[in-house]
Amino acid sequence: MLVRNLTLEEISKAFWYKIASWQTNQAIKSFTNNHKNPTPFSLVFIFPHDLDEDKLIQSLVKGHATGIVISREHKFQIDKFAQAGIGVLEVNNRKKAFRNLARLYRRQFSIPITQVIGSSGKTTTKGLIGSVLKQEYSTLVGVGNYNSPDGVAFNLSKLEKKHEAAVLEVGMQGFGIMRLSSQMIQPQIGVVTCIHRAHLNKLGTIENIIKAKAEMVEQLSPNGTLVINGDDTNCAEYIKRIKYPGKIITFGFSKGNTIRATNVYYKNFQSFFTVKGKDFKFDCMMNTFGSYNITNALAAIAVGLELQVPIKKIQQGIARFSPIKGRLQVLSCPNEVTVIHDNFNANPDSTNLLLSQVPYLPKRPIILVLGDMENPRTNEEYARKVHYRIGEKIGDLTIGKLVAIGKWAKEYCLGAKAKGISPDKLSYYTNVDEAKKDLPKIVPPKSIVIFKASVTYCDLEPLIHLFR
Image 1 (tube, one colour):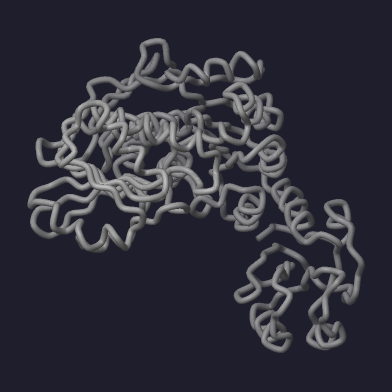
Image 2: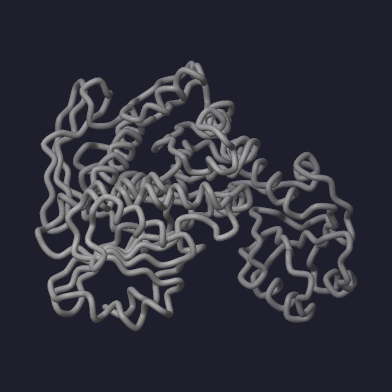
């Protein structure tokens, strides 16, 4: 909620509208697309076409909403809203109007916003940054993985006068998307977690992926800071391409980075490491494991230091971070079975990173349960190739069993078999329901069961529930 009211004149600079009904004394302090629980003095964007008009008015009045924004093709009775004291604005494109108002709204807040981008690790890094900043500032952390332009607009609508900082993640599905989101956010700090092959099927080349992600820097304050993975060769190309005039901080494990991690070790699925920089050195503990999560933590530490969070509070923020559901979440289950739930998302690079951590896990039977990473309707040659290569990677590991599930997952087994894994360690199922019958039987006590898939294409959650 704003310190001062927005005027219709200001809003007209954000988007075109036609006033269907409006009272001159109606104040606008915020905006939302939540018509069921609007905030007081809010402008509510109505997206469903088939709402019960009377129930809608009732919830708007109860929430003390100021007005609504609707499509010009609506079928509402305007006089009903007028009688209830609810203003009505008609627009041609509600989504575009919502995004444009988010852009205007953000400019009412003179707070540093950190924007997180990258092929993987965005949501975890955003959560780590949020955990660090919250130790010192009232911080808005973007909801879930709402990282599309519409999701960014939704998150910006949650800004209130109490907030002193914010951190949002931004996704990239093609050219122009990053620019659209970044124009709304106007970041003070930009974070690049990594640049890998995600979206290669859409953009064709790594060069195009770098070009699309470079759109963020167009909107990054020239007096701001770019925090970027210094161990990622594609990020090095990114730095060359953008020619950013502001401050650049690199993070990673290599000595040349501004901030780096040393003395890394894992115990009980926790990570312990030392953070080193030019003028500082301190230890951190994190309640998750994996070198890539330490990399994510380094990005968060860099943001914390840049925003003057004391080192002790940075350490607290990293230690208090809890992995998000479905993102390398460690679950203790009956029969001393440990489940690693990494089912939210998968691409070839993130799956390879997870597999690279298997040798560092406790010496117990490892059961890999892997689902499809790619859309069943994607290019067949590409999908088969990337799944086969993951299978080859598995073939180099010491595991108890590979359970592959989905349209493309058979390629995991073929790749692993080609590398010499015994066929009796390989099981393939076309879908989750088929696997349900067998999975509990093939997992011995004290096993570590790793679930990894893209939940959009192969949701392994029903299998995870078998062990809870």
